[in-house]
Amino acid sequence: MRTIAESFRTIKDERGNLFLTDGNRVYPIEKPKRNFRDSRSEAQMSRRIQFSNLVTSYQALAPFMRKEAWQSLPERTNAFHALMKENLGSVKVYLDNGETKEKACIVAPYRIAGGSLPAIETTMEGDRIVTSLRLSEGFTIADDTAVGDVASELVHGNRFLEHNDRLTIVHLEQLMVEERKVIVPHVFMNRYEFVLDSSSRVPFRAVIPETVFCAVDGRITTDNTLASGGIAYILSREVRDKRYVSTQSIVLTPDNNVYSAYSSEEKRLQALQSYGIKKAPCLDPEK
Picture 1 (cartoon, helix red, strand yellow):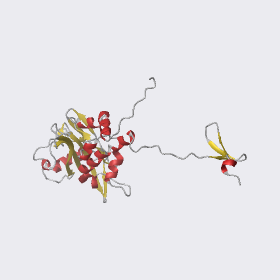
Picture 2 (cartoon, one colour):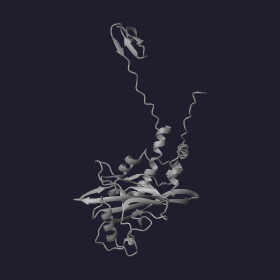
Picture 3 (cartoon, rainbow, N blue to C red):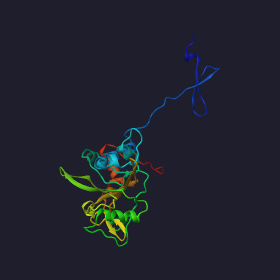
Picture 4 (tube, rainbow, N blue to C red):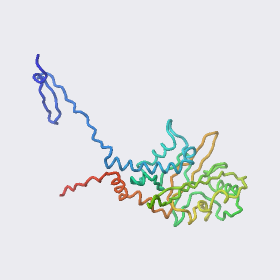
């Protein structure tokens, strides 16, 4: 009996593909598949180091986000999965190894609510954040102004609002805390909400502070003493036991300079180095 080595020989085509032949038939030789992906490559780690800030942001937002942030969720997913899906890779924040261990958190323009109701738009004007919510031009909010007065103004001035809608204001305050002689960034959530109930006589300022809700020239704005961080205005509505929500992202306050520092290329490289990952050298073809 002849052995395989004696009866077959290897041949190669013009593309370099290998084949076995016995002189009559040709059999392709499949090259073994190799996975060259490195789980600790620069690209992989650049994505992984964004994960930590989403985790700590969710922990800060959890009292709001667990039940109220998302209009619907796919089966076997939760609010944290939705936060990750909406933001990982698109909103970049880089925490180094030490900051991750200290559970650091940076206020970032994450999408924190999603649904089919019209979004409340925001713009930056000087040292204030101005919303698309409208009131009568001369309307002011005094100490004796009731929730019902503001609710009536909002429903009258904004076609997309309805009586008994709920307005939730999420203010994320950026804190820089000294821990063991090291400054670590943390986030604290301030949450305010009221129902657009025109019959309510509860004093409005007992529910919503002026820092997040001012009436200026017929528009709802923040005031210029709002603590640095970010803010979002979320509309929700209950219809026959179903909850509808507006899609909203955190808007950074005018004085927030922490996010830009933690989303920079310089911070990305520093965070990678803290995990032992060095930037791949850039080859110059001219040298």
